[in-house]
Length: 531
Image (tube, rainbow, N blue to C red):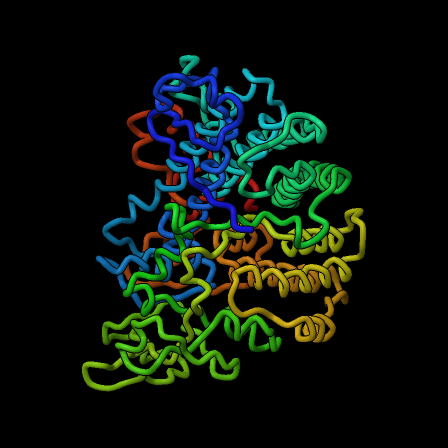
């Protein structure tokens, strides 16, 4: 059943007609309800939606990471053509705005979580406090993975007088987050106070615990190269606690266009220019074609011929053999980097004023333009691939690397059907999994296959930031950077986003300390775990 997100939170907290018995106690304007009568469960849908918006659309994921990690590609070239940020690492007029979106949205969302927790504590809703902690760690770890060091131990304490919080080194922030997550998970009492207004798991605390331990596993695996002892310790804790056990457990948030909570990636991809400009990269299409991956016909189509056809959303040709990825780093400017000079350029479609120079390249299918498409926060496939990675490193996990890899691959075929459009049949999925066993000839061969699948699977599910984070962690797939004239990263794939310029005025001393500690504030400065 579709879960509708219809809570509105502005400067005051509004009381909706769906709240519990407290509603009868409100004899005044509900817009003036205070913490004594307001049900903090009503905040939960909003913080869920806040996170999904932070990881999608123009907040950064499509404009930066989707093409940094060569899942997607575009021929746009700066100025008003905003995809130059991603495809060629060239600034557009709005780059400074894009840089700060995740930071600002992340702390705004975390602040709302904190508000929910404070109200929940006053009412004795300990399970809601714990769920809030899971969500806070998920949110701020996402921010940290993009920027690096950040306020954590002193964050969200403005009411206590801390308006310029110190930046914790990411190494310390990560350990604090993991500790907080562990404490929250151990405090959940499944027979205690119920979670209401839950648009993710409909109040199922068992699934919330599985999400928390799955987040713990992913965070632990970030640390395998920089703190292997802690990584292995928290992997074991996550497994013991209970990570996702099937695709039924995964965190997939329904969107709700009718009530103002549309999928923001779909919002972007419905813009006429985006319909034309955004293509799948040759890196991804070639990867899927090389393996006869049945997801290819689900995700990719060659548009109707001609510029008008390319700019329309009319369904195109999704035959796997006809799909062609756009190479990254090309433009439509007539010079050396014009797409017509790309290797094996197929020519355009249409002619004259209706010529579409990139018309033969594959674009995302309609499932990505559906504003009610779900947002894939964390999936069972990703967890199984991470367990396979851990097994390949010699960690103690429930099954062998090959078995976890097989489970992940099968789950990836199932989960794509949650988009709600075309799907992979059970027989095609089984045949594909059987034909593509993990290469166990060496640990490195296994790690390459596992992490290439994480890249492909998270990219296909439009979780582009995770595709990028896992590439930074693992080094797979091997990517060739674009060195386009005027780029902002010295011809290297960006490893982080710059801190927001607003921090230099609101928290200058602590920002300066963080920049010094990290060794700079550049696009190629690495975060702690990106070794």
